[in-house]
Amino acid sequence: MASIGAKRAARPACARHLQAAGLVTDRCHRLEDPWGDQAIAVHFETPEVAAYTVMEALRGQDVSGILALGDRPAAAAAYAARGLGVRYNHPAAVEPAGASCA
Image 1 (cartoon, rainbow, N blue to C red):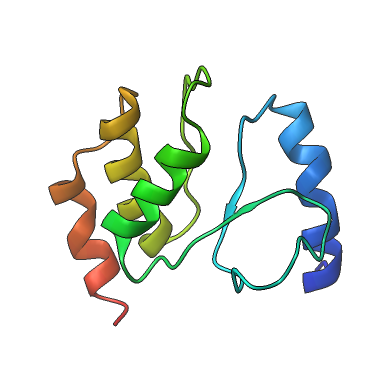
Image 2 (cartoon, rainbow, N blue to C red):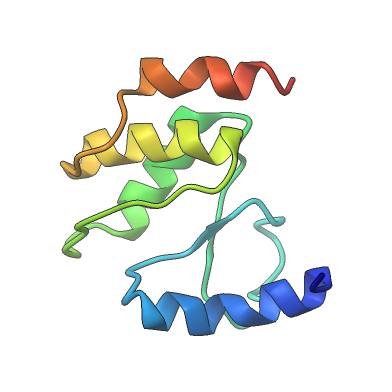
């Protein structure tokens, strides 16, 4: 099993491999890119706000897909996908999953 640090270290390489436009994380927005992954910092507890932050950060970029790992990120991804015009699950279909973790 990889350590948390090893997983974080692998993120930039994975993002490049997938040709990702952006990586989104729930780390503190006050940290200035501590892992060098240029991730967009959001709070997944408020999926609509997280989605807006992502949409603003990716404005003008061609986004062809979204991959979410976890219940809370899935809700934010659903809202962001709608705003970015990307096919994805409807927010109502994923919101209950995030609520079950509260």
